[in-house]
Image (cartoon, rainbow, N blue to C red):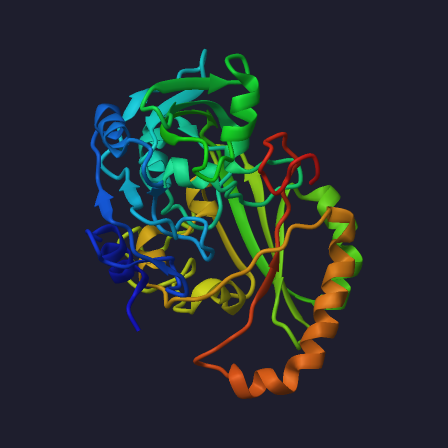
Length: 371
């Protein structure tokens, strides 16, 4: 099976007539052209030349399990903005906002912000996405009072269908900003973004096994005590895992969450090889302390080396999470005999996880008005 890295290189290297796939290769499209503009002017030129005669679709890292990033329109053009990855304005203590070109990958932004003494407030486990791709799809980490990455947006610059540019923010064109912050690429090509950042901080990452029923009973108090909490369980078993990330003083010594550095091979967060997110469940009582982006994210080499997997997410109000877990347990029990025939380790494994995200006011966000 091809690695995620080889698939990604093939995807981003696509040209006319070459199929473009989502990350797990279950969906595919055939754009007429695949362009790699290096400037806003080049994006405008491509949009202008199209004359509105076909769909223009932007693709970032390709880390998606849906058809949202693909196209079924005739004469479609796909854009990749990897060549547009410059930091345009550095953050300062007086103005903790970074301005970047939209193709900047999150892992590169982390690396650029850290020497400046800043960090993104929250991140998911994967940092391969572009800034535009992650915000346009409301990518998120976990934290009951922490929003998705799009919640940190201050402004966006769009190239519209008539090839003009428009800067939108809460102050300038607020309705367009509320729609475009999580726009799914439907309201124009995002070419620049301003993102709110915070001073660099460290987190202690602790992972421990729990009995699922016991964990469900203690979740209300645990959620009150810990801001950055998430948990996992293996369907059709009582086995759960609690994952906490707690802030610690900046002077706390680093006990690396990336033991082998970003040049690690197939190793996971604690040097354990695994498939997909399920590697989280293989590490009991793991503890490390590191700068936030390393405590929150896997190293890039780990993400590039993982076997392909398929993922589905449901968003429900936090008060209904326990009821959803009960429903899922009943469903898994009912279909278990069939799953045993279709999905057996080590070639196939099931994994379920719960994260928490604060409500926002971005119209197309999954968390619009509700956490």
